[in-house]
Image (cartoon, rainbow, N blue to C red; front, top):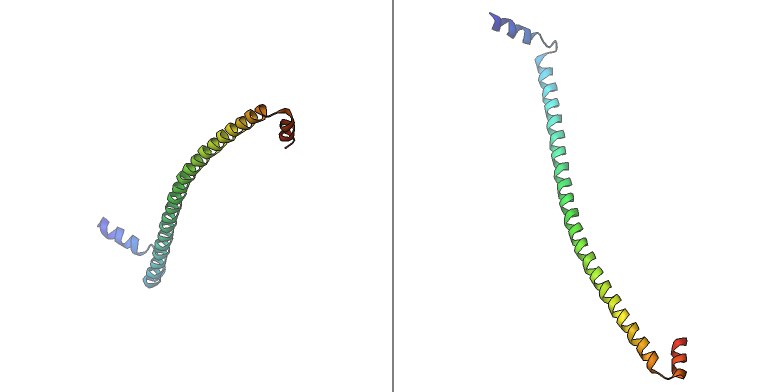
Length: 103
C-alpha cells in the first residue's frame, strides 16, 4: 500500500504534461553533457600547454647554463688577453709604450 502512495505522489509531482517534461529534461541533460565535454576539452588543452611550458622551461635552463659557461670562458679569455697585452706593454721601450697606452 505504501508503494502505491509513493507512486501516486511521484506522478503528481509535476503539473506539466510528460511530453514537455521529457523534452525539458533531455535538453537539460544535453546541456550538462555539452558543458562537461567542453570542460574536459579545456582541461586537456591546459594539460598540453603545461607540458609544453615545462619542456620549454627545461630547455631554456639548459640554454641559459650553456650561455653562462660561454660567458665565463670568454671572460677568462679576455682576462688572459689583457694580461698578455699588459706584459707586452711592459716589455716595449718607453716610446712605443706611450703610443700603445694612447690606444
